[in-house]
Length: 176
Image (cartoon, rainbow, N blue to C red; front, side, top):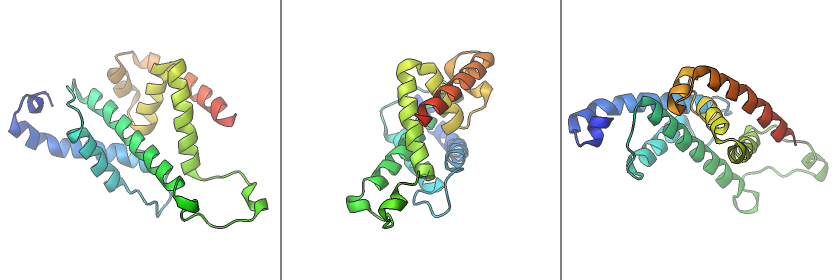
């Protein structure tokens, strides 16, 4: 990545398949909980992330872990934007008509959970940004403990401690 950033075109040609493979891994992890027929497919998520990563402001990539961290954040934003756009469609979009009694049932829609998680992560970031990043990297990015530790420049033990505390905090926050 460093050589590509310095203008080496051959480095870019070697990098593209590696970047695509990493983006595919992250996208498959992000889309794992989505139901069949979802309007956003992993390929579209990969393509949108690639466009945002390449055409966005110039990023001085430090290493693979930094790329994975930024990619996880980009994919999180794409997923959240997609869910919010679908929910804000004029007059309910494709939502089925329900009676008042049916509307009282709590939703089991994973998109609602994703929005609740995003809101809770934003709240956690205000309280403890590192714990929020640990969740983002592990949950949205599918990074291992070691990759997360490298991306955040902390020890794997710190990642595990942050992961446990953040999960408990998020569960409590999402129940509220």
